[in-house]
Figure 1 (cartoon, rainbow, N blue to C red):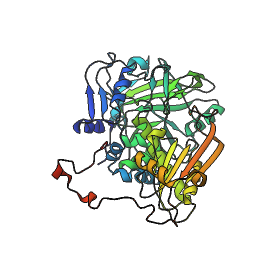
Figure 2 (cartoon, rainbow, N blue to C red):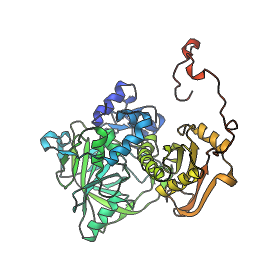
Figure 3 (spheres, one colour):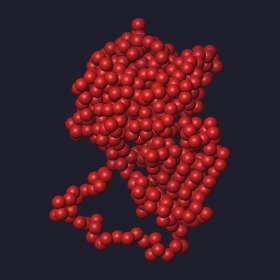
Length: 457
């Protein structure tokens, strides 16, 4: 089954012993992030009391790949393919009235003070202050009426003011059009949505595709949306919290530093500014925060990138089996690709396709289909036994990379690919894996062992 609301998924985690309920009062400054990091990938956390704030805080809701697949009603193996299909076949949303939208329970348009209204944490030591990290920023293209959804880091800099980092993608494109016309770009920041909508916000799609329609496809039914009160934007009707506002033209203010996904700080610089015009909330809302560089952050960015990467590689190597953006590479910089090799040179073609897919990708490892690309030990074994640097290395110098990678020269650096596939003309016995007959069929319970291998065994 798919879980169609933030609350339904939160309750499911509690019912399956994957939610840590913290009843003692904790501080929004570092303590929320510290506890969430301590159980990262093992349990989600719900903080019931934070610095006296009336709104509880949740974190880590999709901090395991298996959880995301479960939330979407599919297996881990099918997760990337289900996401690809949703991107290729989006489903229109359905508009509902304010009276049918739980997020319209509380409406605030006067005397807005975000830090008094919402429990917004400060996560890392040198962060410039409280940051909204799980807010889906939704804007509308006035010419097509299509919306764009993305997660941007948001520093609360005043009672009704936020600094926002807009990377050179679709939101920034729409803002530049508005700014050129001398007008602000209306937006909504949505906090607390179902897992499908959260994941859909990270889709890499052509300009003009509405990520909320991808969410509908992932959910298996149209996503209910409602029009905001002060801006011309539609938002998920069952969201926990919506902050309405306008990205101001010709205004830039200092934002940062902020602890980012590579586990380093993004520097302080002048960024765009959102002026808040209204706040909507459900009855007894729950605030969602994503701890930067935690598994929730990495996986939400990584899985959509895998879907895009798979499609790009498939154009050159139709026999690609699977791709994986590794957590050790921050789910951005390192890609492992599994192919069924039918022609010599396909491994290097897969490398070139991967490097062309995203400027973030820095290192690529291509392996045969017998290697488990989700197991770092298996991948390292393939590098150790199937790779020779003078024959199998692809090196690209002075190429565009991530500016958040501190080893680059302002984003310019080198990239590398390792073709770890077995030559087609190799002696088959030379690369035959050792095997113990009957191992896969053993009844381990006879020896006091579990029949299924758990993670970490």
